[in-house]
Image (cartoon, rainbow, N blue to C red; front, side, top):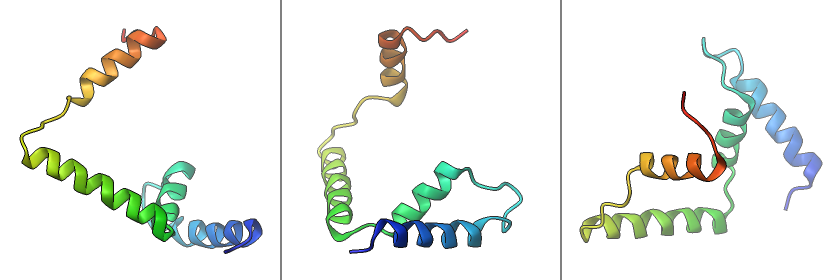
Length: 84
């Protein structure tokens, strides 16, 4: 397992290699998400794959889920956020 310093150095190398390659530079969060995706450990990867498989099985069985907009509306109400 890598130390925190080694992980930080690896992320720095990754971010530096990406920056300047595109006209629209990614945000720090986007860089971190992409780096994390490329460095998933086997447990995280298996959890992600299991969640996708379960969602696909639900979809194949007719479950269409709830549109994202419904969840957004509920969260806005819950946290008192207006959309003016």
